[in-house]
Length: 177
Image (cartoon, rainbow, N blue to C red):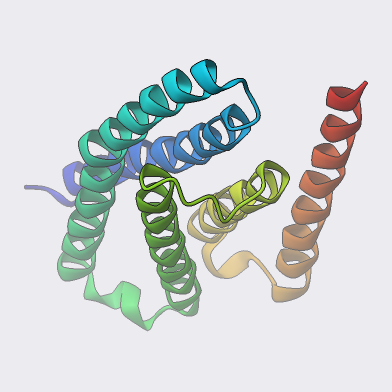
């Protein structure tokens, strides 16, 4: 298989993995908020969210994560020189963070299925932005490579993080009113 084909497959599965990561946390938020409903609605909604979470996780998110890693590793085998580039080291650091995030989501899903609710919905809204920040950082690293200087990269990263927090605060106020 050509490098371009492997790269295209890697990108496709990255997109699928992120779609799953973004959506699973939204489902967690709705699942937790369903606990505030009357007993009948709470039971019906909780059972439905458990099914949705399980299917999303095991049919889309986790297979996409595995295939992202497989095709990413394959690219590194085809072009081992990437491992000599500083931007790749940083990218792989963000990938490690996303793998940790993935397994925190998995633990959260298992807990919710058991009726263990350790998170508040607002905390999950903030937690959901970690994946967004990871996506932004990785895309800029891959596109800009070594032309991205550390000062503007760091400022841009924190600007996106602050912007996301402000938008979450605005959303929270609008939702309350």
